[in-house]
Each structure stands twice: as structure tokens, then as C-alpha cells.
Picture 1 (cartoon, rainbow, N blue to C red):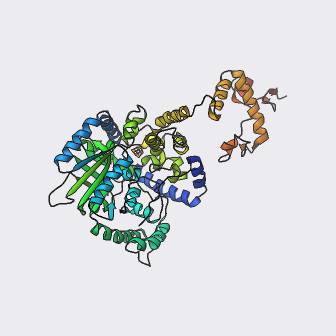
Picture 2 (cartoon, rainbow, N blue to C red):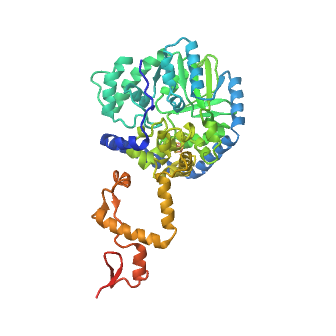
Length: 501
Ligand code: SF4
């Protein structure tokens, strides 16, 4: 059986990012992949005249759901039950895992097939299944690569984005035969050949699996219909072939009606893979006699979501439809990859969602995440449901800082107090600027400072610092009367005016 790795023990973001930045192969893979997807997205979004109106509508629908979540969930439960499904409620990961493992074990299976699902990754369902002696086979191609490679996902949509095709070929050749149908010995790194090897390997598992596990992209409250979108058809196989289907669904996935679903089915594929529609959009409503799984379970999980809902600023993160557009444009994510975030949710959405689901002030790694951003705002610009990620990041940074207040000022607080004191009087600022100009002359080389002494070395360890100019703007302004008499006067070495004679 394959042993599932988890993010447990991943070092805090600054440490993990530093290691990732040293991996030039990773940076190259990430740059190629994210730029390809973001260019495709930009092209198909450019085809829509009403894209901004769709974003408005999507944000409004999600906000309505968040404001009335209890009502919509009960409506969904009633509709699902009427349609023959069994609904389970899980407060946390442990409860959700107990329910799913219990259902699988009741059918005496030692393996299940899985559709790619962020919710099951979040609750580490595969680990719980393995502990019960049940192998969970991932059937999404990228998830299969991650699983066979004893790896961790680094992107919510393309979990193996950090791998290139020659790495994938090696993994398939080395690992497939250990857990099922082996790849052919002459397998090349041609994408079609790699997909063919995965198809043959997986088909064997689809044909014998009795139980399948899925997530859901959406749950339509008024009919109890679940919806999964995917690109490979593996999801359709899992959702239709096995006798038993268990869907693990975050409570925020509910949408009121099919009309609302239509908005998201336009936004999601364009934002995610740069496609006009997903190759496979599967919807199912409970049990249909003689067609598809005859036992259908839906596990609705909270696992911290109601805590996020209670946060007036942070609750907008629950609008997320997991499209990954924010990751593909994030300059930080592009350079570090997803593993550095230490969570199944990497990138900008992970930097806000993970701390809110886990709670701030709990551990160093989680508290580092809201700071893993330059606050450039690119994520907000592309988000199809208009999550203001920079706003939530700043909100969470304040919470992290507050959670560590001990009465004794830390380095950050001391720095901010010092900045406040300096900026509080113009003469102090002028003195600081003069000192900075002198410092720049001591430490600067060709306009850049490559290294500063501790603790300022924490900045220059990773980047060059532009050397402060010899003369500050304020001094220049005074000396030249705002530029009106600049030609004949030059500063001396201290930034003081001297006239050219
Ligand atoms: S935060 Fe927005 S852009 Fe990022 S994954 Fe969620 S919906 Fe997509």
C-alpha cells in the first residue's frame, strides 16, 4: 500500500521558501506552468463582455449563501434525502474521516477510487483510510503523479505543477508496477504516451472498485444536486461505475439554485484552466434506480468553516471556488512553489484560508502564512468571486501580531515604535535621512547595498537594497527651491548646499 505523506512538520514559510528558491528546476517548472495557464485564462476571459458582471453576480450569490448558510444547508439536506442519498454532518476532520472509513469498512473493501478533492486532502482522509487498511487510489492524473512519487501537492488544480514530463516518466516507470499495471518499458515523455500509461493503470482500478470517494465543486440546495467539474473523465468513471459513492463536501459549496450554478460554470473553467467550459461537468442527484451508484452518501464538513464565517473580514474567503487563478498570478507563489506554504491550500488563498481554518497564534508555521505575500493585489484582480485577499492578509497579520503580544515589545513592535517616533517630527526624519545617506556611502556599491549587519541582514540576505541617495529629496527641495534654482548649486558630501563658482 502507498503511504500518504502529509504537510506535518513542514518548516515555516520563510525557511521553506528559502530552500525552494535555491531549486532552479522548480522555479523553471513553476514559471512555465503558471505563465501558460495565466495566458490561457487572459485569452478566454477577454472573449466575454460581461466578465465583470459575472464576477459581481458570483460574489453576490456567495455572500447570500454565507448570510443564509443554515437555511440553504437544511434545504440541501432535505432535497438529498428525498432523492435517496444519506446525509452526514461532520464537525471536524476526525469526525468526517470516521464517517467515511465506517461506510467503506461496512462494505468490506480494501481499496477505494477517488476523484480529486481538496476537502478530502484537507481532512487527510487517505491517511485515515490507510490506517484502516483501505488503499485510496487517486485517479486524477496529477494526483496520481503526486501519489506515485511519494510527493505532496503544490497547486490546488495542478497538484504536480512542480514536476516536468521527464520527471513524470521516471515516476511512472519506477512506481506504477509496484501498485498495479506497470508502465511500458519504452515509455517516452510524450504527454499523450504518459496519459495513455495513466489511463491503462487507472482503468484496472476503476473496473474493480466497489466504493468511490469524491468531493464536489457545488451543491445545489433546491434540488440536492452535486456537481463535479474535471478535465480527464476520471471523475465521471468514479461517479458512475462503483456501487457506493461517498462525497465529502465543505458546507460553503452550497449554491441556492441551478440558475446560480450557471454563473459559476462560466467563471470556474475560464479562471482555472483557461477553458470555455470543462470537458466533463458531472451532476447527480441522489440515487437513480439501475443507473450509477445505488448507495450515495454526502458528508457535509465544517472543519473550521463556521469559525471563518464568524470573522466579518475573513469570511469572504469562503466564497472561494478553488479555481487557482490567484496562484497563477502570484509572484511569491511562482518563485517558491506550493510546498513552502505547508498546507493543501497554497498560494494567496492558502495564505488566508489555512490560518483561518487552523486558527492564528497556534503554531509558527501557520502564523507565517499571512506574511507570505507582497500585497501586490494581483490575486484580487483575477479572483472570479472578488475575494479581497490583500485586505484579509492585512487583517490576519494584525491578528497574528496581537496573538503574540506579551507586554514586552518584540522586534516588529520596536521597529514600528521607532518609525512612529522618527516620522513624528520632521527634524528627526531629516537626521535619519542624513545618516542613511552616510550609511549608503559606507555600505553601498554602485548604488546597491548587498549586505547589511544583523538584524538588517534579514533583508539583504535575500535581496539587494538600493543605497540611499547622497542627498534626500527634502534637502534637494530646500537647496533648489523645488527645482527652480538647481543648475548652479551642488550638495556637499553631507547633503548641504554649496554653490558652484
Ligand atoms: S481565492 Fe479566488 S482566485 Fe484564488 S482559488 Fe479562490 S476563487 Fe480562485
